[in-house]
Image (cartoon, rainbow, N blue to C red):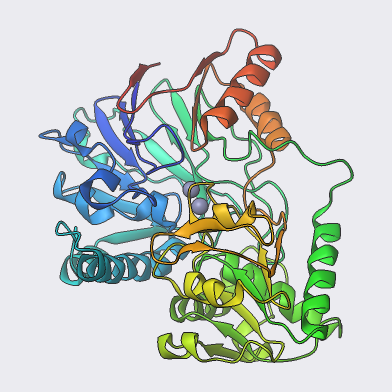
Length: 458
Ligand SMILES: [Zn+2]
Ligand SMILES: [Zn+2]
């Protein structure tokens, strides 16, 4: 088999892997780079030119894994588009939102290449999505079956426990197999159960390495971290400040809302309105609607019924009173410019009563990343829009990640017993840590950190 890394960046970037196996071609993920603009944000689709794909398989609906699917399809109009049944409900909404964001950026920031695709194109594509249950064999290359009796490669989705519908992909060929983790979580979150990757064996393993540069702190548990967040929120609310929890609309928002619902049930946080974003509401309703077919805790917890959720409109961002002990769960998790969370953070920054609590990863190179390391009273450059600011509000970082801890990923890699491991989806220091650990734990296994466009023969 041949595997080509199409991520244009050496960091997390835009996930996309091209697999050639038994004369068939499969693209795994078609992401968009969250920090680049225009066509630079795309995977290296030049590697797809004039070679038809049999199928595109999507691990999950985060932007960095699905955001450029309509562009990938232009290179291969006959490809099947495969994902889990649950991802099918989400994918279209994510892509339509991308169109809206690109249109806004074209107008506000003059990015003339945008949009890279249109609402009509997304709609056309949606009709082609094929959704599958977990742990079913999918004959993704059947059309290419050349000789009767010859078996074409199959794929199988395994629940990755990262966000609704998320999956790892196991591809089986005639004599070789490959497993791609996608983004994976090996511990329970508030809603989602941990990944179910039991029994996975493969010759080649492509794994995410997001948390390779994060050593676990001694005695850390998710429960204790949640207690710490609860206490921090209680303190802000009791001094009549407001709390902003920046969160991605898909996954993080619902996990946080579920935690808040449980805290309110237990009387630890007073019952009150929670302000969310429009897209956050869409995905929250989806989590509710699909609760009974999702592998999750509290299947009867309907967030939209249990909580008083109000969508914070754009106009209110400037005017809503922050001195009344309010709770905001808004996008974006990294406080990217032109988002509600960014604009609200700017308003909160000067007031020591307010609390901005991070509950997910923020790239150091984003406004959220810079705010995380800012010192109270010391001016720093927050964003191009807001310029230099001085913060006096409380900032804290809580580790409630939806990505596997590094030790759990190492254990998994060992169980898969592959001959080759490809490291992706992580900063250089993360991949480096994994490479060193894997070399000593699995001597004889070939470990590769493939550069952008690098072809690996296995
Ligand atoms: Zn993800
Ligand atoms: Zn990702």
